[in-house]
Amino acid sequence: MKFAIEKSVLLKTLGHVQNIVERRNTVPVLSNVKIEAGNNGISFKATDMDTEITEIVDAKILENGAITAPAHMMYDIVRKLSDGADVELVYPDEKEQLSIVSGRSKFSLPTIGVEDFPVISSDSLPTSFAMKCEELKDVIDRTQFAASTEETRYYLNGLYIHPKDEGETKVLRIVATDGHRLACVETPLPNGAEKMQGVILPRKTVGEIRKLLDDTNVENVQISLSDSKVRFSLEDITLASKLIDGTYPDYERVIPTNNNKILQLNVKELATAVDRVSVVAERTRAIKMIANKNHVILTTSSPDLGSAIEEIEAVYDNESLEIGYNFRYLLDILAEIKGETAEFSFSDSSSPSVIHDTSDSGAIYVLMPMRV
Image 1 (cartoon, one colour):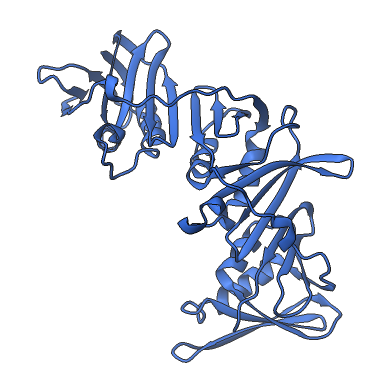
Image 2: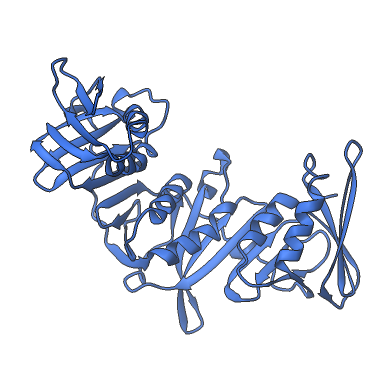
């Protein structure tokens, strides 16, 4: 195998594939990227046995062939080469290793044969539909922060995606929750997704496709699904993954429907005020919101760090109510509200709060109160 490629192209591709590779592996070949030079270009492939990425790039191919080499080491080497340089990869070299040559720099890396590289079975994926990249980025951004990181409830470690009938309108609903907060966002149901079953996309897969969406110029992403796998196709990049095998809880049961105390606040003013008082609440993460007629008081105190009070204007015409929140959870939600106004609805100080983006009826957030 022998080919020449421009550094920026190689670096970008290695950046994509090395994200999949775990830093510590008990199986040596899983630390490697598979590089294959063929008639269709250079294919780079990496896997952790749950997620697999393949990217094809153009290069000046001098000799076809295939080999695997350490992914993170290759990325670190190429990253430090001179900008604009051409890079030549050769296997085998005089040491029976993979050579990376650029100008006066030469590196030789150990390799493992492609026969040891795992092949992820390519099951049929009967459901297939396209989404605009910007649309997929938006729904991921507005939900993924609420996904759980606790391995004990593994079925919450991702995004739950399913079709939903909203009256005569069909939508694709994306949900994430960690038990303390819930994010639920809707988008028009894409053609082809009408009969899909609800699936749970793993958190790592969601994070990787989100990075790829930022790094591509294509307009649409093709999403293909079975009951156990998902594949995202972005022209020359394909990301495939196993789905989380579990039953997502009935999240609709935790979304209150009878909260009748309504509070409206300017999002930026509230976020700024919460951020300021959080300096004192850094250890406990607890702040108290006191809703009074047409204004809100945010307060927190700490025996070691003192106290803080902020008062901001609000639209509220109900009995006074005090409720505690984890300020980090609240700021995460406020960061994803696109309009100028956030609407809180309460039942009482011990029940979940519902937060709406007044500019988007398709987004709803639920935040559990915190004892302060």
